[in-house]
Structures are given as C-alpha cells and as structure tokens.
Image (cartoon, rainbow, N blue to C red; front, side, top):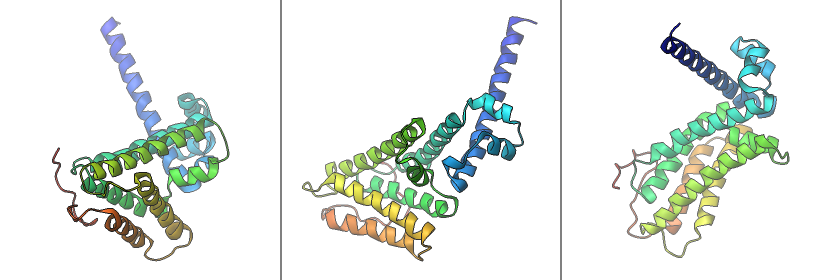
Length: 225
C-alpha cells in the first residue's frame, strides 16, 4: 500500500473516530440535561448509544472526562445560539437586548429539558475538581460577555454614565435564574414573561433619553459596525 493510501486510510479512521465521539457527546448531553452531570456514567451512555462500555471508554478514558466534554459541548452550543447569534445587532443596547432575547428563547426550551449550567452549579458548587472548573470557566466566559455588552451600551450612550454596570449584569443573570426556578421547579405560569418584563424594567431604569427603543420580540437590527 502506498504512503498516500495509508495516509488516506488514517484520515478516514480519524474522521470516523471524531464522528463517533461527537455522537457520544451529543447523547450524553441529552442525558445530562434530564438527569444531571452527576447521573452520567460510561455504562448509561453506552446503553443509550448501543455501544460497548469499552467503546465509550476508549474515546474518553474516564467518567470525569465524559462529563467535561459534555460541559464544553453545552458551552459551544450556548455560545452559538445566544452570543454569536446576537453579534449582527448594533453595539450597545440593541446587542444587549438581542443577547437577552436569545437567552430567553433558550431558557424557554430548557424549562423542559434542563440547563447544564444551573443543574451543574447545584451538583458541583461545593465539589472542587476538573468538572467544577469546567463549569465555572464556561459560566464566567458568558458572564464576561454579558458584562461587556452592558459596558458597550454605556459607551454608546444608551445607558447613563453613572450606572453600576456590574450590578446591571448581576440583575440580568438573576432574572434567568429566577425564571428557571419559578418555571421548572414551581411551575409558576407566566415566569418567562415576568423575566422579560424584569429586563425591560432594568432598561427603562438606566437608559438615556436618546437610547433606541427596542422590543424583545422584534428581530434584531442589522449590524452597524
């Protein structure tokens, strides 16, 4: 067999391995959304994917590595659906609103399926280790993105210059946590709508007279740079 043929075969094998690993992570993520990261095991995922335990183990090496892979995949999807999808909106309040609107759309779905960030925080808040570190890193990245969006809204003149930007970001995050608790745990009707109303109240409290007036239900404006 020529060197080219050997290389092509190795490439196909590697690609197949990556596809199999991606399929395992996808199945594990769906399972973790229902039973939590702590409920994940090599055996449970093997049964779900109809693979052998050794086959699943070969791709991850440990239950902990499987859990971390799930956290990273969840974060990648979250960024794509919430953060990157908001980037076409103009800097400032339009982009902040787009981020929150995307976040609420995802939250609405996760009321049934569960949020890895929230369930993971409950499971690993007092358990040091690589899984907790991966969760903390993912949530911190997202909180930093939200804080930057608030800062940009101030820089664009959409928020008053005397505001406490970290307080605003904190309150926005609190709305998401409250909506999950009320809707998923207490089954309180109208929880998502109340979270949206809470966000609008924040904007109305701190926006300048010249700030654009936006509805969370309207499509995001096209980017202006």
